[in-house]
Length: 287
Length: 267
Image (cartoon, rainbow over all chains, first blue to last red; front, top):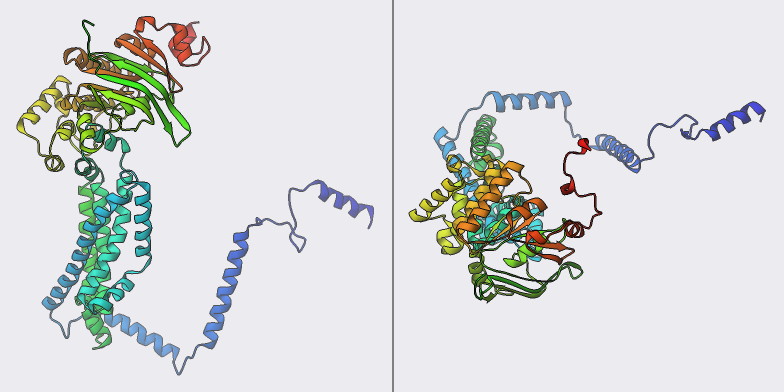
């Protein structure tokens, strides 16, 4: 080693501002564990993807033909909607049934959730009670709605009863959490002021808690109703709950009628958009 | 005071310990005669708010007794406690009104304690109660705001609504927890004048937590100084000396803002 390179080495030792990568170049990325984890993940996914596509059982699919048929199907569904088996009024009636499934499950869920939220809002309940109910409700929420419907179907049989109970159960858990959070956001002072004037618990609930949290409760209820409506469509197909979901299922899996499928899809999409518009208007009004 | 007047409120050796260790009040004893206007002064965290809340039992006392209106209320519960609370009104620093309700509705909340639970829940008030509410609103100069929602009011107006709610309650004792701490000087004067007016003309006893020593000296008939949960001064404003003020606020003789006579730039 000559003196020149020794000088260079000592120069490097004197200036530890930068570090070198293994190949001798200057490193600019941080020593972050998550960086390594993400790299590892991307590599794994890439390997799995390549392996999967390489080993699929493609049978005798002609890719070009498959693509053109799929495009044709999409065209039929979305550009040529037409009712062949149902009348338009029939579809509307089925839509009403789905709508009612959503309303009933949201309503039952909301009423139960309101009383439960009073028990588990930390500012008006004991922390033991609040934590207990919140944990139970969290477990109920962790199980998907469809699973609850299937669980209740074991007792009530597949159909609208199981669907309503299952949807109600999940809505109840969801709304309890949301209502409790809405109540916890209320200024504690307001509750204290009414307490100090000798008001009883239910008077405080009706005169302070409800007025102060009604707008966010209504907003969450509408949000849940939209979820319940789309869930009710799915339950019509998956759990035989009736309504427009069942028609969708029949059109797609029984009649193989893409025109009808397209029409029903459009009806559902329009209904959901209308609901969204109404709920937005309503939420703005109760502010 | 002529003759033997029974005190409206008496605290006997009241202590409050939070979480088994933090002592907020220790051995506090004093008597309050009917019609007194008492200011409680002391630094932040001295236990003033705790003291007030022990009186209407928003906070349970750890030791000692609270006797109000000839009745030991230290450990009463439920309906009995609510009945006592109807006789002790409270005014707060942050007003604590229900923002989404109208001013009148908030003022009528003062009657809740005397109503049946159901009538209170649905907010059903008699015509007489409504008339009285509007009289109070007029007295406090809130007529233009009567039907406004409380979140539309200014701080001073909110505090007047808070006072109106307490008057509606027609209590024997009013507890005020720093009623002017969030208000400008003009609104503060209006609020203090209203309190003094209620005290003099309706003969309602007032206990006021204050940060402003000058206001306490000007308005009250008696001042109680609290430091670290103990009473260190109890007497008429005339006996409150500069040294005592400095002792209460545990400060050296020249670093209290109340001492500044004339602006800093004039010195």
